[in-house]
Amino acid sequence: MVNKRNLIPVYALQFIPLILYPLTTLSGGIFVIGFVGLVFLLLGYGLWRGKLWALSMSIFLQGLNIIVRIMMFAPNIRSTAGEWNIPYLVLNLAAIVISGWFLIRLDKPDVHSTLVG
Image (cartoon, rainbow, N blue to C red; front, side, top):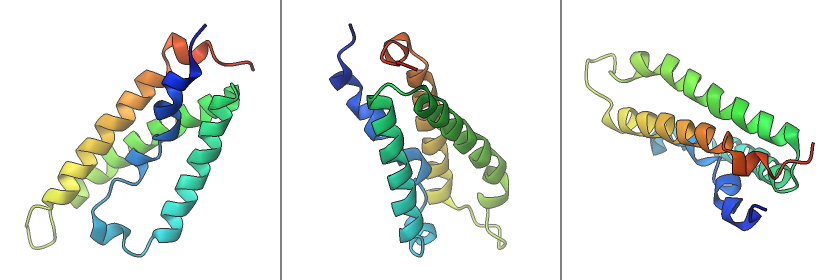
């Protein structure tokens, strides 16, 4: 039997790659950050309870995050003046890597063994 306590960080920290943006981008979006946090709090609780819908939704949102960031990568790494946007570049790559790690981690047998349907 898998110890669910080992999976708490995986369940609780999934929101991080979705909010990894430069602070200038997030300055007006405190409500959006709160909403994302609330959604992932509910998903984490659903995963803790072993609900299959929570796993499906978590995997979907992490994959969608990767796709959106790849689509937005090229248009936003340089400003209209031709300067490199280094904070965006670094945080975008970090979010893609972290979301990929969550995708792989959520598809492991120890997570699937905790699901009840």
